[in-house]
Image (cartoon, rainbow, N blue to C red; front, side):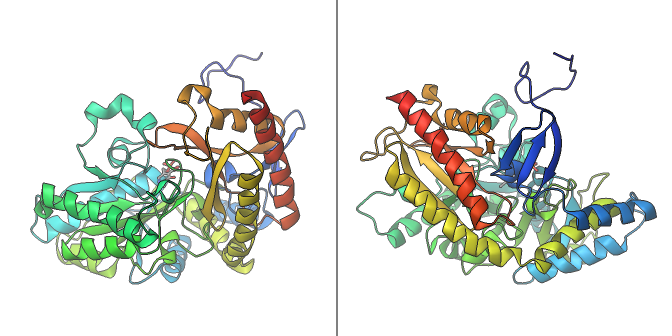
Length: 444
Ligand code: PLP
């Protein structure tokens, strides 16, 4: 084996080398074909190898790739900002560009804290989040994240932010109606605020559909409306982490559009540039930006690559491509078909307990006992086994934490490019079924 000095996710493991990609397919250097059933990390939402994006990238590179945001703006970044303002709900008109989802959630966190400072509330600086959540890997973002596997090593260094439970409809107590359950979970926020004191809290952050920490867990109807109401009553900002759910992934422009709610801040990433370049953003309302403009006039955040013309032109081309090809609408239509087929998988296999999702962000949860919903022991590694079988057969899917305590990796996310056709969905599901079948037989 050729010597490597690159630090890989699993040290010591040999990874296939990527050669090229086209549409929903990726090809390694040995010529093996893979269906990208999760767009990598729910990122490649327009598919691979799109010529229009390559052309836009080359054109921008010929003009200028990098100019620092403290010195210049650019047509690309201005047009992208205007486009995002068109896409976003309410008065979320303002975009702070960064390069990763973690930077986006941390920037949103900082803007929320700064907003209250500018209004004279120096102590309103803690963020409430949910245990089933993932908001990023950097220390600030990790402080807001409940993903235990990713945060545990660093717990003593993280900001001591409070967390509440997220709704988990599959595991809802039978005696509660969906509405009662939605309110019960949302009301945990109210209790947390009373315990800590609203004078100490800047914002509440949540993913509209929980990704890596839940396996496409969709909040019940009424949940986010109640959350919004609690935030307003207590003068706390609501940050929607749309890094995974944004830019059409769920069949609407943003995940939160499925509820009758407008957040104060949104974090975007992944689908914003669909993997063609690192690009992410924090979006804020008129009220927030006007307050800071009238105050210090300077948002205390930013990175070297923030708002660079090369990434902006690439992301702009991606967003235009999505519009020209009606990909948000397609995600809704094909997502419905995909979810119906996943529900059929639940009916067909003993070890598949639940199928859920919105649009093209869907998940399956594996259980040891379908009746009791008992999870497999973590040591069985069911989710990982399915992922490995699928990968060997040429299908890439994404792992997620779930289970009765949210601590086992027993869910998978199926989130292919929004460009996928119905035939391709069937092909993807054929391989997924074969992988599940093998693991189920192995566990007998
Ligand atoms: N927020 C959510 C909801 C995510 O799913 C992720 C990544 O998976 C992040 C934030 C962090 O994004 P990144 O990995 O680009 O830093």
